[in-house]
Length: 194
Image 1 (cartoon, rainbow, N blue to C red):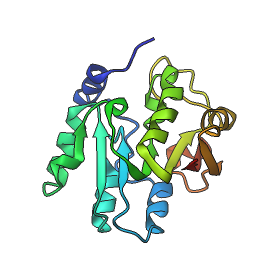
Image 2 (image 1 turned 90 degrees about the vertical axis):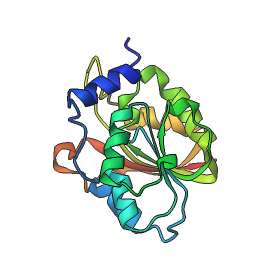
Image 3 (image 1 turned 30 degrees about the vertical axis):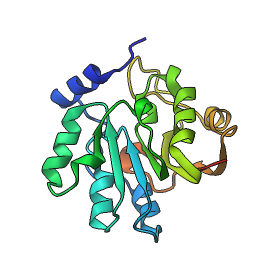
């Protein structure tokens, strides 16, 4: 199975094969951000791509948001869109090599982009990157795509088995406010570090 490495993702961006990119922040993530009172919450967006979530957070005066991507192109795109954003917070790195600590990690089409063999490793890395009582929040697909390459689907049962040993599952429900192309295909979740 392909490792879907740095070269794979750079090529996808260069060929503009980015159909997962909604072009703006998705409604479930936006509505979650809208209820966060502490604008200094330390937030990580891994596999951020063009990071529409970052644009929104900056517009809402959040002050400590870090994005990581294995591909350089989307980070360059972010710098063009938000020229004043500190480049120290735009990290060109393999997520699994990262080692800072966060209050909140946002999951938006990153999990489904990884080789499914890396899912258990992803869960452990998320736990490691979160402060005590930190949370992962976001969206996961609740369907099987039968794809040989990303996106890869999954199921609520799989997510419960993967995450529950390490996280308290606060919310894992069908997303009621998905964007049109993803309606009925994803779950919104909040997992709290144990």
